Amino acid sequence: MTTVPLRVSSPCFRDQAMAQWDCDEAAYRRRVFWRSIPRVSLPLAALVWLVRRQYFARDFELIHELGQTRDATEFHYLVEQFRDEAIRTGGWGRNLLRLRVSGRRLRRLRWELR
Image 1 (cartoon, rainbow, N blue to C red):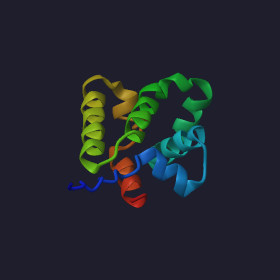
Image 2 (image 1 turned 60 degrees about the vertical axis):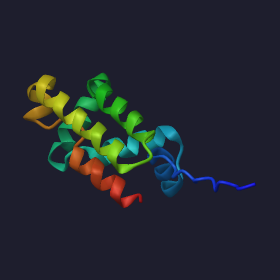
Image 3 (image 1 turned 180 degrees about the vertical axis):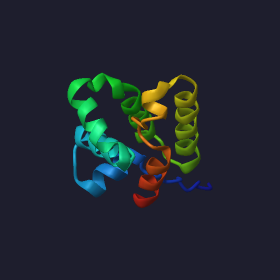
């Protein structure tokens, strides 16, 4: 009888981040969010966060979806899908003022957590 070696799947992005940062899931989401906001937009994003957190609901949905990914291809696909959606329906706040998570910063964060 031949045994087939089990392929060990890699941990998802969320599990990698939570293990490296030693935090719970809520802290993981906040940390990814604030590390992914473009630096030039941080002061305005903090103000919008205090006044209207729901503005960033789609960003947190993306962070949740990205947290479940196990490979770079799926991660990059979701980031590109988010970017395309932001271009089409984002409005001036998301596009001109960059009040959204940055795909480039998200990809860099994933790279750092490998």
